[in-house]
Length: 523
Ligand code: NAD
Image 1 (cartoon, helix red, strand yellow):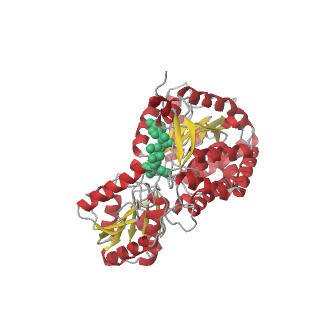
Image 2 (cartoon, protein in one colour):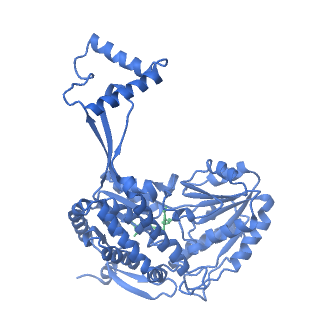
Image 3 (tube, rainbow, N blue to C red):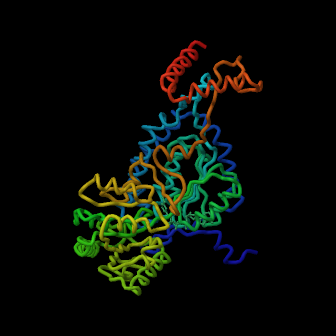
């Protein structure tokens, strides 16, 4: 007979982080059921792929309409389960997904169509090449709780448009939002088995990694990402890993202090600091440092912390008390090593167990955990620098490389400096918002991950690239086939001279290319 703890382990509770109210209890999907879901997805995927891109895009259009008409209801569901203010749920989740659908509707035909690939090898000039993009089959998606709608939805839409089926394992903290996504997709016409949600904690995710999926898109922490990469390596499962960040913002000596401090405050405290692209480290030119830190502290103190359902709330709760403890430990460590608290610095017990005050710290150093580890909470540590060289060195002194920001009145200077920052994205005079540009690839370097989601490069992750190489003169043997000897050497030597001898190259090459084209047209 099962013990109480075994029974408990097979259920998860969705809890409102602002109030502690249990929203719903759900049964976890077991290993066997995860595999069965993947098998059903595989059986259904062929029909979905054969439907063709035009009809899949029609379903996407329907999804976009349905999401648009239910936008407020979906935003409220996100706030109830993840805590963020409704305004943020609308802008950073619903709007991002609507725009991602818009991007696919506008571009998927061009990006997924067959693509002739001209080539310049004279010896093989009568062969034509074509790139064909085909679905992988079943894509597994494992997602976190911090953007419970926009992260799995943008990945899912790209996967589905490319003809794949999807099995999603959402965070155990936000399963209800994933079920809302499923209901929208199914209502729009995506067959039940083509998009399925499996529910549970880590073990349900690792069951999905072990199941016969064809590719995995994982978003979450570096530690889980490493475990998944190791498991995927065992079976050479291709993976995209969107992992953590410790994003820096550089405020150069010519920056507008008011604009840059507002950006830093929003970037550090939006979603209670629980954004992979959060401003986690702030470096300010020494000339502006005092004024900037003061402005950040003033603005942080004015933020209204509370239940995200209240339209006047700026900062909601953190997702879970254990996440509050991480923030607390980073701030205590910083204080013990000499950091100065300019705003916040403590829990807000009167609001509930998951609330922490927006906190601004000065006199921080790279010896402190708050400047090295992902804090993932409402903390803004600020440190001075003396010149651009030092700013770049400090920004790059991190194991992470997701995104970074540079504030300057001189955009050209910002762009020049951005090339020297080790990150997947650098924003000049903005923070975080690159995630909402559907054309822009999202992803990191170093420990922040492998591969990309969003835009053209995110769509490319959802397809297998096949090169089709066709000889246009089927009756002709190739000159490089057997028959080696003196004559062969002379002939091949002649070809090499034609193509690569410097004096001949450009003109001869052009003439031969033209001749090849004429010949192919005649065949
Ligand atoms: P997490 O790694 O704890 O969990 C992420 C998902 O993995 C969850 O669904 C979880 O159930 C599942 N999981 C846990 N153990 C697993 C295992 N052994 N095998 C398979 N799946 C497993 O991360 P989290 O706390 O949910 O999310 C916060 C982290 O995600 C932060 O580090 C944040 O920076 C990162 N994140 C990154 C991006 C990005 O785009 N780079 C976006 C959002 C969040």
